[in-house]
Length: 222
Length: 417
Image: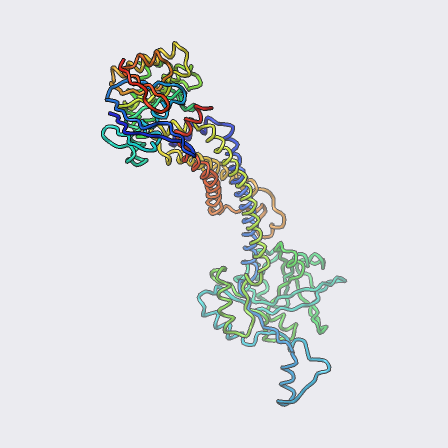
């Protein structure tokens, strides 16, 4: 479970407040979309929630642990074990093959062997079985983004944070990614928090949080 | 991170190759320059240590001064004003107590051998040719233990001086100038104009022109007779167990003697100072080359880190720590240093091996017909240490800068780009 208590986030000097006193709770297994206009603070909220960014004030609790109290090392280990990230760009390492990219989180803990079968399973599931030895440069945008999702899921994380994962894809590929997210949420029980501009995508999620000027405007159950 | 570091290096083949070339060039240059210079230094040191006495005990020259003459000629408190002050050397130079030295040297465990010598500047002539010669009267059996003059004999044997009877061994240049060969008779004339006939029984060639052109050896007693200085010696030449300890021994002996005691290091101080300058130049040259290659590594890693910001961000996001990122780039520096250094050592060694087969000029006499190149293990240890050091030094700053990158800052700047 992710719980935010009075989270505020400011940037720059003089400080400009981006998030205003946000409190919310996301339960285990939920599929939540964060929507809102550009500059509404949805990406900042996602990064604060996932502890990639520090909050200015307030508390972020995940599975009963306060993230701000964790050391940098413990935070890295927690992210490696429990969180997966998908960004608008795939950010795959160009020197590595698709399979090697997927296994990068496992390499950190020297557990590639244990995770290899699952990585292969994910790539097969994402219809990438014949591309596992290809480098990112040899993959299409949609394929590379699916490899990035497989990488995010390789350690079987509880939480998947996605920042406009379909933003750079055409509608066909976007639909494929939406289906994959659905599948991960339904079959693996992964909690997914996804920032999107795509209203169709947002409506397909179980819960939609709309942000406006750094505050949650409305929370809708779909 | 080794796996990823290797992949990143292999992915940038051209850049990696240029970095490696810089390190290879630097290390090869170090090995070749060091091998060549140290080889030359070792050759010269060998010549210094083995061709001349390691410690020379000689009579101190007694100068005539106003004070000593006034004190001896006039009663105390007499005011003496010299029109022309007395000057010059008091008497012929010789060691006053040679027996004391012999006893001391025989009982010293550090002394391998010693020989008494008398040195004289004479005129040597054959037919119409005359030359100045520095004649060394010595005990042949001891002389060959103190220096390796016997190894430099071109014609005849040094041991033939043992038999006495006015025999002489000439330097090759001197023999050539006089136009003499073995068994030729030469005339030696001292400063008083007295002459004696000597028979040439050998010719030596050390490769040192100054020695070969002016020096000659004869039996100690023959030279004493010629100079009319029976029983006198001017020098004791000593060989010690550890040539590099000669300086300390000389200082110890000097403390208890009126005679002049000099080690080969003191006698050859100017040559040794040239070695020091050579070493400084050698290190300066190699450091310059390695500095250039270090800048290459620094620039390439910096450019790469800028190009890899996205990858650094995602690595940090999936759990890699700041020190993992530092390691990633540090390992690349280390690998560049290690691979470039090893290839450089190998290449340097091969070039040194080749140089050592080239014909040498001026070293023939010492039994070396080819160039002398040093293959000391220390050259190779310093070589790899310099390569690794420069590569690691060059990668510290870029690696640290990469480690400081915050994933969120990169992602934000990428998104806004």
